[in-house]
Length: 436
Image (cartoon, rainbow, N blue to C red; front, top):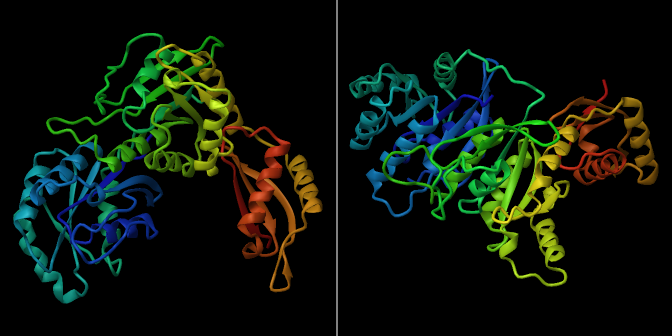
C-alpha cells in the first residue's frame, strides 16, 4: 500500500524547502534566500505519530520558461493531482500577495484537505500578523517558523487527521512490480508485450499514458503478478511530462508500491543522467531490481555489442552491481518470456532468510581473510551478526564501536555475504550496532 502523500505549495521564497527538510528530518533540498533556488530533491518520506507518509516540495518542479504566476498555478495543480493533504505555505513578513490569492483560489476548488501554514513567525510578538490570512478562505492559519522548527508539529497533527485509516488487504503471494524509466523508453510497449494484449495506449509521444493502471496476471509457471504502470500524469489541459523531476516523482509513487522494480533503458539512446537518478530512488527504497534494455532489435550488432553495453551499464550504475541485466525487444518479443521468471527469482531473493549460525560462519571467515580495520590505534571487533528483516534482507552486525566500521569494510562484508548466499537482484543492508 502506498503511503499517503503531503504536498507543500506556495509562492517562491516563503520557506517551502526549509519546511520540507524539517518534516523529512534531513537537509535534502538546497535552501537559499533567493526565489526559485530549489533544484535538488523534491520527494522524501517522513513519519509523524507513527504514520509514514511521502512528502513533495512542489517548488522544485521546474516548469522552464513559463511566466512566474503560471508556474505557481501549475505547481499548485500538480500538488492537487498527487497529494492526499496539501500544506499551503505563506509568509507573515510579506502578508497576503496576489500569488497567495491565486494559489488559494485553485486549492479552494480542489476538494482536498488544505492546511494553511504561515511561515517566518519567528517570535511570539509576530503571531498577531497571521490573522489577515483568514481572508484567504482556507480556514485557520497555523503560525510556524521553518528555520526554528516552531509549529511544525501542529501542522503535522492536523495533516495526520486527514490520512485514511483504511488498510488494503495485501496478498503476499502476489508479486507486485513496476517498470520505471524516462519517458519514451518503451514501458507501455513492454507492458503490452508481456501481457500479450493491448491494455495500455502505446504512442511515440512522450507521456501518453495518463493514469496509473494496475494489471493482475498469472505467468506460465502459475505465479501471480500485479503490474503497476508508472504512468504519465493524470492531468487535464497542459502537459507537464517534459518536466524531468515530475517523472521522477511519478516513478517514486510506483516504487513505493512495488516488490520488484524493472529499470527500463532505451538501447538506441543509451544511458542518460535521469536514468541514474530514477534507478537511485529504487535502490535507496530497498526494492528488488532488474535492468531491462529495451529496443535491442534496433541496435546494429557486432561481436561484443551486448558485452560492451553491459560493461557500460555496470560502469554507470555501480551501486546496482547486484541487478541482473536482460536485453529485450517489445516489438519482436525477444527474451520477454524470461522476464516473469527473473522477477520471481528476484522476489524470492528479497525474501531470503539466513540462519544466524550460517551467517556468522561467513562473517568469521571474512574476518580471517581480511582482518578488521583499525582507527587511531583501536581495532574494530565483530562479535556476531543476525538477520533482522527481509525486503530487503537486513543484517545487524554487533561490534565494539559503530564508528570503526568503515564503509569499505562494510562493503567487503556485503560482498562476502553475497558470495555465500543467493542475493541476486536485491540490495542488502548492513547495520553496525554497538554491543551493550
